[in-house]
Image (cartoon, rainbow, N blue to C red):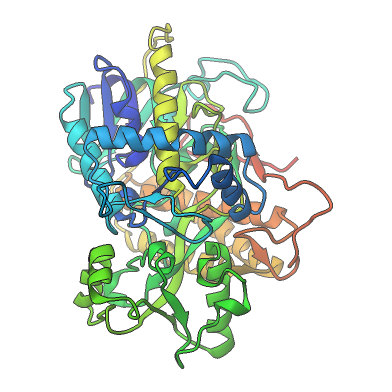
Length: 552
């Protein structure tokens, strides 16, 4: 296959990847890949908004405080301060790009309030902020001749100098300067694997919530970037903190349609089937408590009463108010026979956001030289044990710009040249047992839902680890014998991420934020909270197999 070449290869076409691309110089040759349609990532599905201090009665210090409280004191305070400080400029940049934010009667930005926030500070485009953001950024990217947009391409593995045997053995990741040289990528339509050489590679591939049976995320949220970086020798952190959004529509036909946090922010009430409220029994903030608290409360009531769901009611607000603030939610619920202006709607928690990820510094740089990670795939230190609502798109904007500026400064660097080998398919055949992939896919996600969900125990986690180990061996044996497909690549990455989540959860001997275990129900306040950091051994010359975990 002819090799492809660029200055910057970006894996992911959501808010993080597009922000980075649009902040790079106009003469920088950029390839931006999406494994499905360009607008099919998690950004498109985001409803709430972007948190920023834009009201004079609010302050950066209070935004930081709310971030630290929601994150159970695990966020890095300097990181939280930096992101909150740069948030207003991110909003101004978006407005300059043409982002259609909602306005109030005076023509000013309308700010809403969400769970965990002490002020109205969430800028939004009605209840479809993500879709408006994706449309805006994509339109700007399409107008840039230096950005080559490539839908239906999925990354398989990163190409590094050490894995090609171009540098010797080195100490642990974080101390070595192994370099990323590009990536192997599957063109899903042509069924061909390309070796793409790049001066810099950026992982902007989103999170891993599809590892669970029920999720608010699109099908592509399979942890691809986290798994690729791990196999290439990068550290990951805090993978035990998977945020379950408290309110997804309980309707099989809706495919886990998210009911925005803003519904509760504007007065929505959580109810039991008899119409009684229950959140006040779990937190004095009631429905405005952070997501981890609300999700656990709903999970508790469902288990206590044997319920399939609870209910969310905003019908006490006027019809005009609801249709103005939540047009997408109103229309979508009507499709399934629920009129939110007149009745409560059934809701359940679902896996929503990966708070941990690939460890990066203030510029988005990973342990691997020339490899960056931005957005949900990364661990910046912002979210800690639980992400504050509407800090996710904000993180994409702040770190997307920071990484772009750092890459721009480095574009004149001399990069080691050398031949990148073609993808080798000489030892594999087409699969005649695709049922193995679909079966393992379901078994993995079911095990994660049953054993590694909202409430955990050590015994359940050990069961999950055992089952994942069996699946991991079976999947990698399958991977080594058959040609890669999109489903196989995703399954290989999902089992890798599932293993990281379980190992991280077993290491945390306390309950904090999103990680709640019945065996250690209290937070360990005897020492400062610490991140859970997993370190892989330096990868061996490329074989397509994963590195082993160093438990020491």
